[in-house]
Length: 549
Image 1 (cartoon, rainbow, N blue to C red):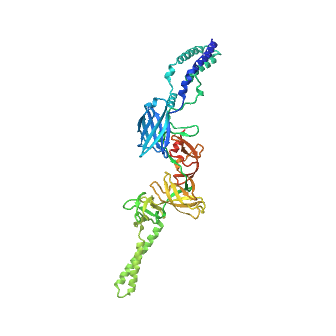
Image 2 (image 1 turned 135 degrees about the horizontal axis):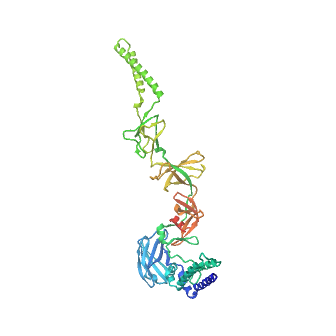
Image 3 (image 1 turned 60 degrees about the vertical axis):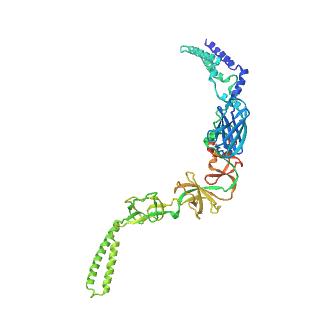
């Protein structure tokens, strides 16, 4: 019995296969229309104006840009005319985007459209042909009609057969009984079910043999088979894609150095402790980092401290001086009373000795009561303040550093010999990407750790430039060479790690171009090879186009 059921399953499989593949005479023509790729989209350019028009529902969406820079053109008046189509004027619907009602979009056929664009007191006429039929076929290809599938009698017949086979198999393979034909029956049932799911897709021919239909969503960026990239106008608006017409010019190549920001020595000052002592704060309060001060302003006071051994010696000397002072005072008093008896010279000598002893007493007086003012040597902003009230400091310890944040230098390390070509221009870039113009000051005649220091003056100081931060220094030397100057963001890395740029071939198609580049000034590069004059190179949004897959 089980063998008979397995044979029936195989026969039923063959019958359903023949039924599913029948009707080739009337199905192929309809399928060919559905699978035809394409979209109602045109591109036309002229007089530095680039226009893309696409059917969106029952509207014609128009994108107008400048051909050289890819900048959207706003405020334009676009009149559209064609044979058999009512003339109309598109309305603005965004940056460089315009909409025109298109009730004729449902009529298949080729429409010869004429666009009269008036912008900035200039009128340009562009003409092209719009194939609406191919767009209708593409939309039919992308849609899968479940309703049509359910209206087919074969669908319900195969569903009933599959249900019956499931019941038979469940009764046959009960635990009480097994048969050697069971695997054959199971395989036949699985093949039948699998073929049933594929039957609606075949409809008269093998699906694997037909090409993959084009996506109906024509506004999706995608990479093409030849490596180029299709980026529709809506995506270009989002990515802010901008282009530059390549031109050849002479420029000097640069070499990159590592440098650091240092203060201008003429406006840099340090306040150090002249002796050991204790820090005292002035009445106006403690001086802090970021405070602007003037030259000669008191930042703190220093009370000198004396070691114990020196203090004992000073106390002994003070006692001796006090004793001598008392003796001298008594002697001067006696001599004064008998001034007529003694010589005036003895009185004068005693008075001079008394004055000397008093000066010694003043010098040996306790130093705890004296305070040394610590003054700013230059005007500027305090960059370092290592002081606290009551802090004990040692001789030559740096307490304050004052700099002028608007007068800075950059010190770079070079590896070239002293006989290298003279530096004609220099630029630097900080960690935030700012470009800084520099003036070359000179280079040291001696090496420091087998490198030659070079010094530059910062000509354009901004608030984000901090002393001690690392920067990249680009120095231009040698003779000028021919090349194309591009922003640094225009050069990206390909899958192989080599530099390349993106060339805009048409309104919505871009191709990669491998290039050979040299640094220029930190924000621009010099393309030495790989770009032809007149090419439209992407200078903004290149990294995003490079990521399209």
